[in-house]
Image (cartoon, rainbow, N blue to C red; front, side, top):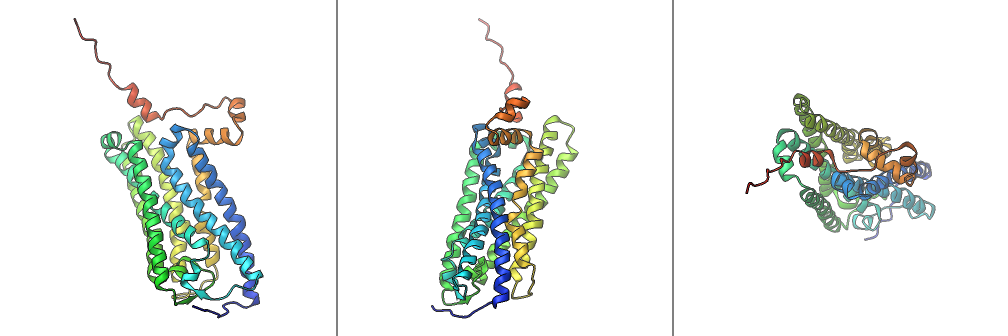
Length: 325
């Protein structure tokens, strides 16, 4: 289908080019921070077991940030080549960034729910948590999160094909690329799941605070704080902007929407600093990676060892007395 309408005048195109420069620079920074998180998580077996779910979260956020870089660079090139005009919904999916925005937006939302649920179980059902929430179970759940986001992407492509005769905005946002119905579903997941995760983390924090007499629950309280911080950032910087994005052009027209999208794609850059500040073993491993071990040797920083929970389980195992002959 041919769509030849021109959406923007020269002044608007100049403004878009300026916004695209922010997309490229800030998106590159956010992608780099998430790549660092993934590398730290993959660096040792202990880190993979302890921070595997956070690694999947960082991977999804990395895709989202890369999508913003691609959107900024390709849109700018289209404007320079005088090809930035109206196109069909399905042609929008020919652009590279909708794939990154869908998976990179929904995968972190799924993972935040998983992290919050794990903290709830750890606080309110500690025996069940220590017995059943094993590294194998975490890996299976992480794979399910990835598969769900890929399945959702395939559904989005199908809806885009159904709307192939509809001409749309050349920005090719998720809702432009897939149609109103799937776009609403996408924004619903990105808004609703982090909000539920935030509520679950608040409940887990209250429960851990009341039970913080034991040493194990004090350690759990720190884990809940990290999960709570990530969920809160997702609600403020991802969920709220996506509400504005969903209604843009239909219920309201806001000039700050492009800047809010930057907040949505770049909120994950805070994750690296949050984990570095609040997780000592993550911080030591990160310093070791970026300095090739120099900082660890210079300041006698310890290497990553077994998690405290695992050590406690081993040390608390009673020794059976030797059988008498």
